[in-house]
Amino acid sequence: MVLNDIYFYDNNATIKAISMRHIIQMAQFLKANPSVNLEIRVHCDNSGEPSMLMGLSKVRADEIKRQISMSGIDGKRLTTKGMGYSEPLKPNDHTPEGMAANRRVEFIVK
Image (cartoon, rainbow, N blue to C red; front, top):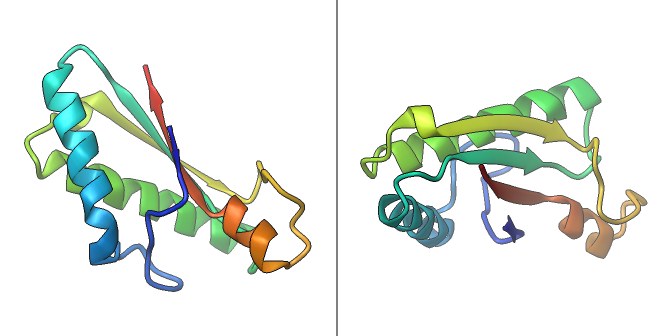
């Protein structure tokens, strides 16, 4: 599952309130499917230094994990990976469309 509408405040890992519905839905899915594990991957656009973006995407993935865990899901079922802008979906040519497509969260069922 790929979501482009989990929003964070600029340059930090704080999830905007409007995005929490997706976190709650994912926690509900995991509660209903106790044998499912999840990998959380966060991707960025290319506006910044690669090492900073890799770190930022990792702490954002960790924050999503923390929020899901707070809903009663065992953190051992969740892994995180910060992708930076290593796997763009669209060219990173600084167009609003391309950059928006590359800012995404992937939930991979394991």
